[in-house]
Length: 528
Ligand SMILES: O=P(O)(O)OC[C@H]1O[C@H](O)[C@H](O)[C@@H](O)[C@@H]1O
Image 1: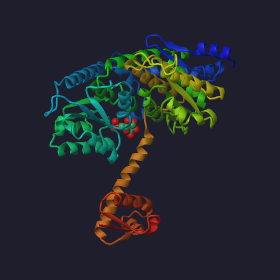
Image 2: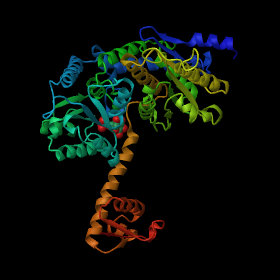
Image 3: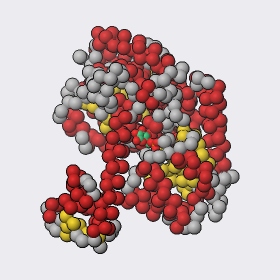
Image 4: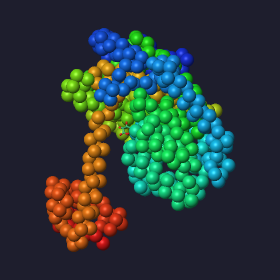
């Protein structure tokens, strides 16, 4: 296509949202009108199903749940007055609580103010808050946030060491929808021990965000934690950023949560229009479908050209891959759906992996996220008449062009500024696009059955570890791995047993390995 035709295509397909100053450009996706027409019936169904979902249909049939994250930013849409009240009341409670904490109305026993937050959570209970903190927290927030989002002891130590002199003014958010996920539970127990180690009563510092009656909820209530905020069964973890999960940490950092909700609501309104060309989420879903033939044949590379948005791709990884990565479709047919997502930020990635994108295997499409405002204020000149922002903008245009010239498609999302409204809008845009795409390919985008397999396998390993230690305690003489396996009634588990004892031996847990480390079969295992 020559430059004139491309410019025309750009104008024909450009979506612009006036209220948000938001642009979506899918002109560099090479679909034609016949393709769009061919998807129209699927979109008609997607629009109808989405409307039903918003009215409270059981859109997550496997878990028999409604899917209501859109109600969070427009409570009048929630299907019952009780739900509507709950949404309004929770938001009010969050704002009142955050204001009191920030102004010292609520303060820790031995300090005038809280200065820091440790936020403990994983997956949907971490990625949104992490993304938003990076994107929107002021340079000097009233409370500085630190995340424990894993069961990595060294990672936990790092945070606790940084905060060892300010634990007495650190508020702890424990975020878990189910209230039973092992990683946040481990983090919470370790953090609690650190407080006890400084003679601080954890309950005076801890806040739970979880579902009613979960184990975490019960614990928080029985120990009299500072506060508890609800997670609803109709909000999935990966779409929970605009529930208490994301709003409590955001409000505590002085991020305008009302503006985030406002931006999301405006985008929700825009993505409720039943016309592909006038609906930015539909345009995204259409582009994804085109790129990967509706089978996820191409990966989504997300390239925000703005440092503060660098966690957007990680956030989207869960939203897209956990929602769309499914073995079965809604009819029970094996389909192995999904779209792989990765990315970091431009122009940094141009010096890392863009080489492969430009010239290597063409198994992706790019999404550029462009921010029009370079910085708050005037930029110095780097060269006569040129700023670093001009460079960044040029790099984006250049990479987009270079990819296109080599038959690599791309989408460009443009926002005027990184602010609470535009971040809320981006979250809402991708939530809806994922919902539409799930519908186009006929999968349940709101459950995650595959995650359970890994969790169960991990639990089995921990049980096996207990058995192994019991065997070693009973026997008292060095044993081969084979002997341990037999005595533990786990003859088919020699390799996991080897890994368990190797791990225990590496961590001062009283297990000793004799023999050559490179020949595991020769090892003798005993207790020290
Ligand atoms: O918030 P939680 O219940 O602790 O869950 C945290 C995360 O755990 C999982 O395993 C799910 O796959 C995620 O969707 C979820 O966000």
